Image (cartoon, rainbow, N blue to C red; front, top):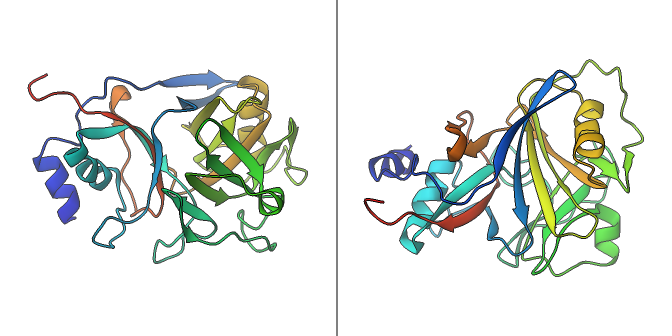
Length: 248
């Protein structure tokens, strides 16, 4: 709470970024918000600050970026996490591994194999199935593991059911075949996993996509006048840009 208050007092939380690319989209009677990044953009994962405390919210990340003269252009929850907000699977932050890769099948969506890893390389953005990642690990500056995969080489995850009545607000990320663009998506209406995958594959035309989470899915998109609140987060992923000059 102290971090939130500090960010609000500094006027950081609602400062509008000059560079962001978030849009609202209707598709087959469902609503989504998408935010795009290009390879080479300053896309980062945030878990804990220099004090060792978990950031937990978008305001705390913005407050930590302020001394750099930076702020979030957009951000969302960046991976599943335990009750103590530690990552469930692999997390790499600024080339340092904070949590290990998990390859075993298990309960819940994370263990619904195949799951995958979103990796930020120097010149590429990739979504890679977890076991393929383990066999040939790329040089990720940032990476987060989640699951299930939504789209795998242009196909839906084999265990998705079109008629599933499990509907939630969900978020995920997909990448282009050349690795030069990633699209982060949050559903603004409740969807099942099959419908969410359909948006990535059929509307966005992305051959690889990864589910990040549901229930806790939240988006910070100041250019849309949106910054979702809720339970404290674990990993947060966001695009970092220069903050406007004072009085700008």
